[in-house]
Image 1 (cartoon, rainbow, N blue to C red):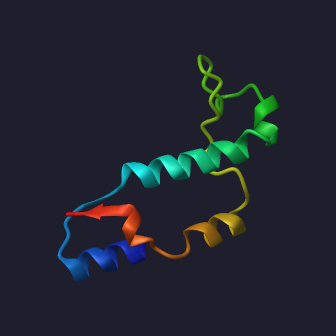
Image 2 (cartoon, one colour):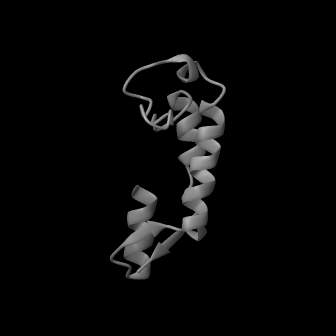
Image 3 (cartoon, rainbow, N blue to C red):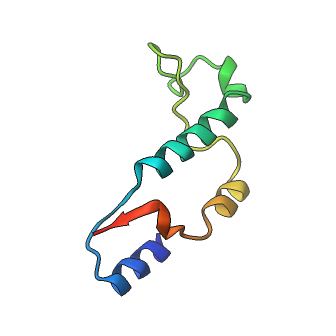
Length: 80
């Protein structure tokens, strides 16, 4: 987040949003990893009862999340 705010201040942007392609790529990667996880066999609020879609935010631990999100990829966002 800090990198996003710094980028916005430097560029004069007031808002940012993920590009549709970046959002889809992120979701595809997360859902791909979740599809082979223990969540597949779990029947809880992490799964949409109608579709079966797993709604966990991240399929791994905090170390892999930090590594994956450490550097802002400004090309994956629209700054306005």
